[in-house]
Amino acid sequence: MSDKIICPSCKTEIEVSEALSSQLEEQMRKKLISEQKKLADEFAEKEELLEKRESEIAESKENLEKELKSRLDDQKDKLLKEAAEKAKEEVAVELKDKADELESAKAKLKEAQEQELELRKKSRELEDQKKEFELTLSRTLDEERDKIRDATTKEVNEATQLKQAEKDKLINDLNKQINDLKRKSEQGSQQLQGEILEIQLEDLLKREFPYDSIDEVPKGVNGADVVQNVYDSSGNHCGAILWESKRTKNWSDTWLPKLRDDQRAAKAEIAVIISIELPKDVSTFTNIDSIWVTSWSCTVGLATALRSSLIEVSRAKQALDGQQGKMELLYNYLSGAEFRHRVEGIVEAFVTMKEDLEKEKRSMKNMWAKREKQLERAITQTAGLHGDLGGIIGKALPAIENLELPGLDGPEDAEE
Image (cartoon, rainbow, N blue to C red; front, side, top):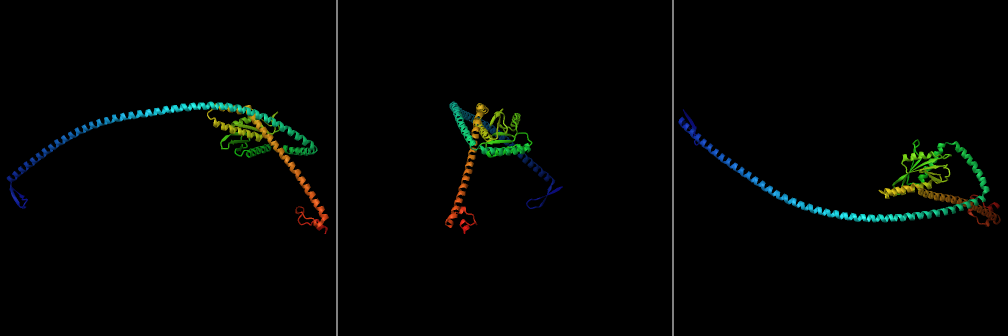
C-alpha cells in the first residue's frame, strides 16, 4: 500500500510507502508530545509565577492596610485632641458670656426694682393730688351750681311777673292742645310709640357718636333695643353699651333683672334704661343694681360719660396688662360710689350747659322778634313820612326805590 503526498514546494505528488508513513507519524507524534510538555512546563511556570505575584499582592495589601490603619489612628487621635481643645475654648467663651449675661440681668433687675419704687412713690403722690383736685372741683361745681340756680330763679320770677297774663292765656291754649294731643296719642298704638322712641334713640346715638357702631336689635329677638359698640380714635373696640327704652306711665322694677339677663346674653359691659317715668325720688338719672336708669334729657350726657369710661378702662387694660392687682383696684373704682358720683357730676354739668344753651336760644329768638317788630315799625313810619312829604312837596321829593312798588305811579303822578 502506498500513499501519495504533495510537495509543498513544487506541488508534485510523491508516493510514500507504509513504513515511511509510520515513521513520519511517529516523528510527528513525538514532536507534538514534546511541544505539549513544553507548553505544560511553561504553563506550570506561569502559574507558579502568578501565585507568587498574588502572594506578594496580598502581603502588600496587608501592609498597606496596616499602614493606613496606623495613619488613621494617628489622625483620629489628633482630631479628637483638637476637638477637645476647641470644645473647651467654646465652653469657656459660653461660660463667660453667660456670666456677663447674668451680671447684666442682675443690673437690669436692680434698675427695674428702683424704677418700680419710684413709680409707686409717684402713684401715691398722684393719688393724693387727684383727691385734692376732686375735692376742689366738687366745691367749685357746688358754688357755680348754686349761683346758676339763684340766677335762673331770679330770671324766671322776673319773666313770670312781667308776662303773667300772656302766659295764662298761652297756658290755657297749650293745655287745650295738650289735652287734644294726649287724647289722640292715647288712641294710637302703644307699640308704635315705643318703636318711635327706639328710632329716636338710635338716631340720637348715631348723630352724637359717629365713630361708634349703633345696631338695632331685630324685632322678635329677645334683648334690648339698641347695642352701642364703642371704638376709640384708633379704631380699637373698647366695649358695648346696651340701651333699653321705656314709654309707659308707671315705672316697674321688673325691668332691671330682665335687662341684666339681656346684658349677659349680649356680653355688654354697661346696660342703660331710658324711661319717661323714673323711679321714686329720681329726677335725672341713677344706678340701680348695676343698671343705669336715666331720663331722655340726660341721655347724651350719660352716654358721653359711660363711653369715656369704657375707653379709659380699655386703655388701662392695655397699659396694665398682666397686673391683675391693679385691674382689680380699677374695677372696684369703676363699680364704686366714687365713680358714680363723678359720672353724676359730669352729666349734671352737661344738663346745666344744655339748659343754659336753650335759654340763650330762646332769649335770642325773643330779641330777634323784638328787633324785627322795631324794624317793621321804623320802615312803616319812614314810608308814611315819605308819603306825607311827597304829598306836600310833589315831584321835588327824591324817590326812594325800596319804598316804591314797580308798575305804580308815585304820589306826584296821582295828583296830576
